[in-house]
Length: 192
Ligand SMILES: CC(C)(COP(=O)(O)OP(=O)(O)OC[C@H]1O[C@@H](n2cnc3c(N)ncnc32)[C@H](O)[C@@H]1OP(=O)(O)O)[C@@H](O)C(=O)NCCC(=O)NCCS
Image (cartoon, rainbow, N blue to C red):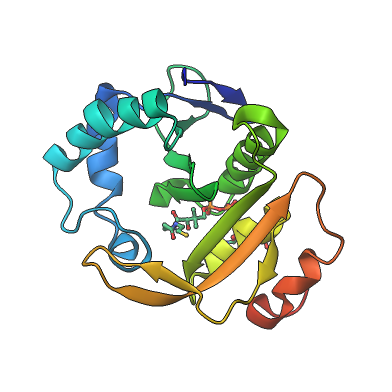
Protein backbone atom coordinates (compact mmCIF):
# COMPACT_ATOMS: atom_id res chain seq x y z
CA UNK A 1 0.00 0.00 0.00
CA UNK A 2 1.30 3.47 -0.85
CA UNK A 3 1.30 6.01 1.99
CA UNK A 4 -1.77 8.24 1.95
CA UNK A 5 -1.89 11.73 3.49
CA UNK A 6 -5.12 12.84 5.20
CA UNK A 7 -6.28 16.38 5.96
CA UNK A 8 -8.64 17.67 8.61
CA UNK A 9 -9.59 21.29 9.38
CA UNK A 10 -6.56 21.74 11.67
CA UNK A 11 -4.23 18.90 10.76
CA UNK A 12 -2.24 17.06 8.16
CA UNK A 13 -1.62 13.35 8.71
CA UNK A 14 1.37 12.20 6.72
CA UNK A 15 4.35 9.89 6.84
CA UNK A 16 6.45 9.82 10.03
CA UNK A 17 10.03 10.47 8.85
CA UNK A 18 13.56 9.87 10.19
CA UNK A 19 13.76 13.63 10.91
CA UNK A 20 11.05 13.13 13.56
CA UNK A 21 13.34 10.95 15.71
CA UNK A 22 14.22 13.57 18.32
CA UNK A 23 10.59 14.43 19.02
CA UNK A 24 9.42 10.81 19.03
CA UNK A 25 12.21 10.01 21.51
CA UNK A 26 11.18 12.86 23.77
CA UNK A 27 7.42 12.26 23.67
CA UNK A 28 7.86 8.54 24.36
CA UNK A 29 9.55 9.24 27.71
CA UNK A 30 6.06 10.06 29.05
CA UNK A 31 5.38 7.86 32.13
CA UNK A 32 1.79 7.39 30.87
CA UNK A 33 3.16 5.33 28.00
CA UNK A 34 4.64 2.79 30.38
CA UNK A 35 1.18 1.63 31.42
CA UNK A 36 -1.06 2.60 28.50
CA UNK A 37 1.02 1.56 25.48
CA UNK A 38 3.29 -1.26 24.33
CA UNK A 39 6.01 1.09 23.08
CA UNK A 40 9.42 0.06 24.47
CA UNK A 41 10.11 1.12 28.05
CA UNK A 42 12.51 2.73 28.80
CA UNK A 43 12.42 4.34 25.33
CA UNK A 44 15.67 5.17 23.53
CA UNK A 45 16.60 7.17 20.44
CA UNK A 46 17.43 3.83 18.77
CA UNK A 47 13.81 2.78 19.37
CA UNK A 48 12.59 5.94 17.60
CA UNK A 49 14.98 5.37 14.70
CA UNK A 50 13.87 1.75 14.32
CA UNK A 51 10.23 2.86 14.41
CA UNK A 52 10.76 5.55 11.76
CA UNK A 53 13.16 3.80 9.40
CA UNK A 54 11.91 0.19 9.62
CA UNK A 55 8.48 -0.18 11.22
CA UNK A 56 6.71 2.71 9.48
CA UNK A 57 7.87 1.94 5.90
CA UNK A 58 7.14 -1.78 6.41
CA UNK A 59 3.74 -1.09 7.94
CA UNK A 60 2.68 0.82 4.82
CA UNK A 61 4.37 -1.44 2.25
CA UNK A 62 2.77 -4.56 3.75
CA UNK A 63 -0.50 -2.78 4.55
CA UNK A 64 -0.32 -4.29 8.03
CA UNK A 65 -0.52 -1.02 9.95
CA UNK A 66 -0.81 2.26 8.08
CA UNK A 67 0.82 4.80 10.42
CA UNK A 68 0.65 8.60 10.28
CA UNK A 69 2.44 11.55 11.83
CA UNK A 70 0.03 14.17 13.13
CA UNK A 71 1.13 17.71 12.17
CA UNK A 72 -0.47 21.13 11.94
CA UNK A 73 0.71 21.55 8.35
CA UNK A 74 2.96 19.85 5.80
CA UNK A 75 6.56 20.07 6.99
CA UNK A 76 5.40 21.00 10.51
CA UNK A 77 6.68 19.32 13.66
CA UNK A 78 5.30 15.94 14.66
CA UNK A 79 2.65 16.30 17.40
CA UNK A 80 1.62 12.65 17.74
CA UNK A 81 1.21 9.34 15.93
CA UNK A 82 -1.86 7.35 14.89
CA UNK A 83 -2.22 3.98 13.16
CA UNK A 84 -4.80 1.41 12.16
CA UNK A 85 -3.84 -2.25 12.45
CA UNK A 86 -5.07 -4.33 9.58
CA UNK A 87 -6.24 -7.47 11.42
CA UNK A 88 -9.15 -5.95 13.37
CA UNK A 89 -8.82 -2.40 11.99
CA UNK A 90 -7.78 -1.34 15.47
CA UNK A 91 -6.93 2.31 16.03
CA UNK A 92 -3.86 3.10 18.11
CA UNK A 93 -2.62 6.59 18.98
CA UNK A 94 -0.59 8.84 21.19
CA UNK A 95 -0.16 12.60 21.39
CA UNK A 96 2.89 14.48 22.69
CA UNK A 97 2.01 15.77 26.17
CA UNK A 98 2.15 19.48 25.31
CA UNK A 99 -0.33 19.09 22.45
CA UNK A 100 -3.10 17.34 24.38
CA UNK A 101 -6.48 18.55 25.52
CA UNK A 102 -7.46 20.70 22.52
CA UNK A 103 -9.28 18.06 20.51
CA UNK A 104 -6.48 17.24 18.09
CA UNK A 105 -6.50 13.49 18.64
CA UNK A 106 -10.26 13.34 18.30
CA UNK A 107 -9.90 15.12 14.96
CA UNK A 108 -7.11 12.81 13.77
CA UNK A 109 -8.85 9.64 14.97
CA UNK A 110 -12.08 10.58 13.23
CA UNK A 111 -10.17 11.11 9.96
CA UNK A 112 -8.41 7.74 10.21
CA UNK A 113 -11.61 5.88 11.19
CA UNK A 114 -13.53 7.45 8.31
CA UNK A 115 -10.70 6.81 5.84
CA UNK A 116 -10.62 3.15 6.92
CA UNK A 117 -14.40 2.73 6.68
CA UNK A 118 -14.63 4.73 3.46
CA UNK A 119 -12.52 2.27 1.45
CA UNK A 120 -9.01 3.15 2.64
CA UNK A 121 -8.72 -0.43 3.83
CA UNK A 122 -10.58 -2.68 1.46
CA UNK A 123 -13.49 -4.53 3.06
CA UNK A 124 -13.28 -2.77 6.42
CA UNK A 125 -16.81 -2.36 7.77
CA UNK A 126 -15.90 -1.80 11.42
CA UNK A 127 -13.09 -0.06 13.27
CA UNK A 128 -12.05 -1.36 16.67
CA UNK A 129 -10.70 0.51 19.71
CA UNK A 130 -9.46 -0.72 23.06
CA UNK A 131 -7.59 0.72 26.00
CA UNK A 132 -6.46 -0.26 29.45
CA UNK A 133 -9.34 0.13 31.93
CA UNK A 134 -9.09 3.62 33.38
CA UNK A 135 -7.61 5.35 30.30
CA UNK A 136 -10.27 8.05 30.38
CA UNK A 137 -8.51 10.40 27.94
CA UNK A 138 -8.39 7.69 25.28
CA UNK A 139 -11.99 6.67 25.96
CA UNK A 140 -13.07 10.28 25.47
CA UNK A 141 -11.36 10.33 22.11
CA UNK A 142 -13.20 7.13 21.16
CA UNK A 143 -16.52 8.59 22.32
CA UNK A 144 -15.89 11.81 20.39
CA UNK A 145 -15.22 9.79 17.23
CA UNK A 146 -18.51 7.87 17.51
CA UNK A 147 -17.33 4.54 18.88
CA UNK A 148 -19.88 2.43 20.78
CA UNK A 149 -18.61 0.64 23.84
CA UNK A 150 -19.00 -3.15 23.88
CA UNK A 151 -18.47 -5.42 26.88
CA UNK A 152 -17.22 -8.90 25.97
CA UNK A 153 -16.28 -11.05 29.01
CA UNK A 154 -12.65 -11.40 27.97
CA UNK A 155 -11.78 -7.77 27.15
CA UNK A 156 -8.01 -7.47 27.46
CA UNK A 157 -5.05 -5.54 26.06
CA UNK A 158 -1.59 -7.05 25.65
CA UNK A 159 1.26 -5.63 27.70
CA UNK A 160 4.80 -5.19 26.45
CA UNK A 161 6.06 -8.11 28.59
CA UNK A 162 3.65 -10.61 27.05
CA UNK A 163 0.97 -10.30 29.73
CA UNK A 164 -2.51 -8.79 29.58
CA UNK A 165 -4.55 -6.17 31.41
CA UNK A 166 -8.34 -5.73 31.59
CA UNK A 167 -9.55 -3.42 28.83
CA UNK A 168 -12.39 -1.28 27.56
CA UNK A 169 -13.52 -2.16 24.01
CA UNK A 170 -15.49 -0.20 21.43
CA UNK A 171 -16.46 -0.38 17.76
CA UNK A 172 -17.56 2.04 15.07
CA UNK A 173 -19.21 1.51 11.70
CA UNK A 174 -19.44 3.98 8.82
CA UNK A 175 -22.75 5.24 10.19
CA UNK A 176 -22.51 6.14 13.86
CA UNK A 177 -24.79 3.95 15.99
CA UNK A 178 -27.39 6.17 17.70
CA UNK A 179 -26.62 4.36 21.00
CA UNK A 180 -22.90 5.12 20.74
CA UNK A 181 -22.66 8.22 22.93
CA UNK A 182 -24.81 6.80 25.73
CA UNK A 183 -22.81 3.55 25.77
CA UNK A 184 -19.97 5.39 27.55
CA UNK A 185 -22.14 6.48 30.50
CA UNK A 186 -20.91 3.69 32.80
CA UNK A 187 -17.25 4.59 32.45
CA UNK A 188 -17.25 8.30 31.60
CA UNK A 189 -20.13 9.36 33.81
CA UNK A 190 -22.58 12.10 32.96
CA UNK A 191 -23.13 12.48 29.23
CA UNK A 192 -22.05 15.78 27.78
C1 LIG B 1 -5.32 9.68 24.75
C2 LIG B 1 -4.65 10.89 24.09
C3 LIG B 1 -4.14 10.47 22.73
C4 LIG B 1 -5.70 12.00 23.95
O1 LIG B 1 -5.11 13.01 23.13
P1 LIG B 1 -5.71 14.51 23.13
O2 LIG B 1 -5.17 15.20 21.93
O3 LIG B 1 -5.54 15.13 24.46
O4 LIG B 1 -7.26 14.21 22.91
P2 LIG B 1 -8.36 15.35 22.68
O5 LIG B 1 -7.81 16.70 22.98
O6 LIG B 1 -8.96 15.06 21.35
O7 LIG B 1 -9.35 15.04 23.87
C5 LIG B 1 -10.36 14.09 23.74
C6 LIG B 1 -11.15 14.06 25.01
O8 LIG B 1 -10.31 13.64 26.12
C7 LIG B 1 -10.38 14.57 27.18
N1 LIG B 1 -9.08 14.53 27.82
C8 LIG B 1 -7.91 14.95 27.32
N2 LIG B 1 -6.94 14.73 28.23
C9 LIG B 1 -7.53 14.16 29.32
C10 LIG B 1 -7.07 13.68 30.57
N3 LIG B 1 -5.77 13.73 30.90
N4 LIG B 1 -7.97 13.16 31.43
C11 LIG B 1 -9.27 13.07 31.10
N5 LIG B 1 -9.76 13.50 29.92
C12 LIG B 1 -8.91 14.04 29.04
C13 LIG B 1 -10.76 15.85 26.52
O9 LIG B 1 -11.39 16.72 27.43
C14 LIG B 1 -11.72 15.37 25.46
O10 LIG B 1 -12.94 15.04 26.06
P3 LIG B 1 -14.36 15.44 25.42
O11 LIG B 1 -14.32 14.98 23.97
O12 LIG B 1 -15.32 14.67 26.23
O13 LIG B 1 -14.43 16.92 25.55
C15 LIG B 1 -3.47 11.40 24.96
O14 LIG B 1 -3.93 11.67 26.26
C16 LIG B 1 -2.30 10.44 25.05
O15 LIG B 1 -1.42 10.44 24.18
N6 LIG B 1 -2.27 9.59 26.09
C17 LIG B 1 -1.17 8.64 26.28
C18 LIG B 1 -1.17 7.53 25.24
C19 LIG B 1 -2.49 6.77 25.22
O16 LIG B 1 -3.09 6.52 26.24
N7 LIG B 1 -2.92 6.39 24.00
C20 LIG B 1 -4.13 5.65 23.79
C21 LIG B 1 -3.91 4.21 24.03
S1 LIG B 1 -5.43 3.30 23.83
